[in-house]
Image (cartoon, rainbow, N blue to C red; front, side, top):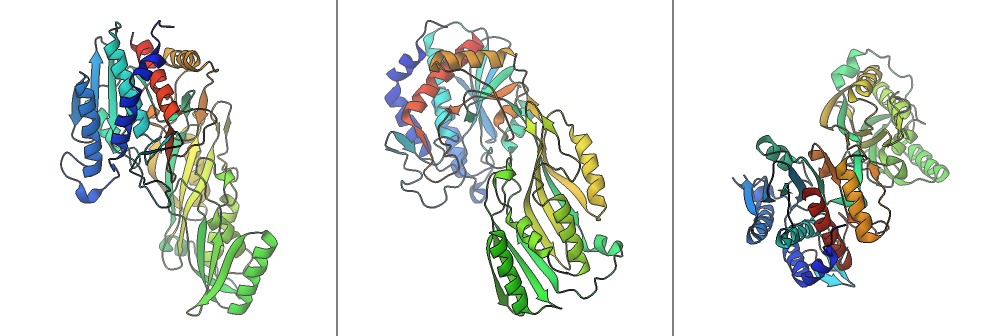
Length: 478
């Protein structure tokens, strides 16, 4: 352990650390295309936030660079190797229901409450102050340290994609934008659109259904691939069954299944509503998929030919199929866990397209090429095709790598706690680095308030994280 007491050094700058964090959090750095311009591709607020951190680092004597407003960095130290610390200055929209103004950055019960407090503007300031302490310490370094600031992490990651087109890839590094002790492995992440056009359906020349009870005109569920949808709506045209019978049948189904929903008549149609439970798409088994549950009910009816195939396809391959078993792509990895499949969006138009937007997360031991080939073959049986919307390959750093072992040691020395390592189904900036991990700031046992109303970081945790980051930067660069 270094003889430097990093926590003591942070305590000396505690007031400045808190005030600077509050000042930074008062900038509304939300994606705003209406104010985008050259040098500010994601809007004025994010540009202001990037300027704030670059100026702060420049005042500390670091060499700064702005990469077209997409990203920026601040560097100090000497040597051929480069240690990277990658954070982001953008935040998600604030939403409603806050008990403290989302950009006031008030301190309430020992917490700094603001949008971005934990994700990721509080940790960004912690990393800057940590780097300042290392620089001010005068301790010898054999490597360069570079703080890299992204601006589009909450949207499309175009910031880091653009940055690394021209800028040096760090030898190794970490992002202060997840959990302590340390995340060393992340699953591959694939967003797919699975589509059957009306022409593709007709091309199968399936026979008509005898005496259908209803025709499915439309169905819609979900907004994002990486969320389990909590609402779904289907519109039916009564044919062999009267509207009142359909309403009664649905009410009985809801009662028997314990699901929540309602049915109503509108303009000669029957409209069915289903409620589910929304959770993050990386663990869909914890939620209730409203779209798939509504389709489950539709499977109890005799529907027109296209709807019948659509419903049977969903029931066979997607209904409560959280791990891709029926599709033949299930796989469990001892390190990263299972492949997961989330049906985030369902859209059906009788005279248009039938589509599913899926989020599939897979471990490194199952190559994309292998499971996607099986997937393509299965869905083709019902005239569906898929398009890859987004694909992030699995990311893993060897647990024995000096980056991992050093950060584990630092965490234990600073906290007195064992530093286990974690594999996740989510995506952090750690995967933007060739050799990168996620390292804090959320301590074990703390509720995660990121993206929620009244987002916060405990002042004590901000201070502790800064000390951890200071020692981490020093130990990696010494």
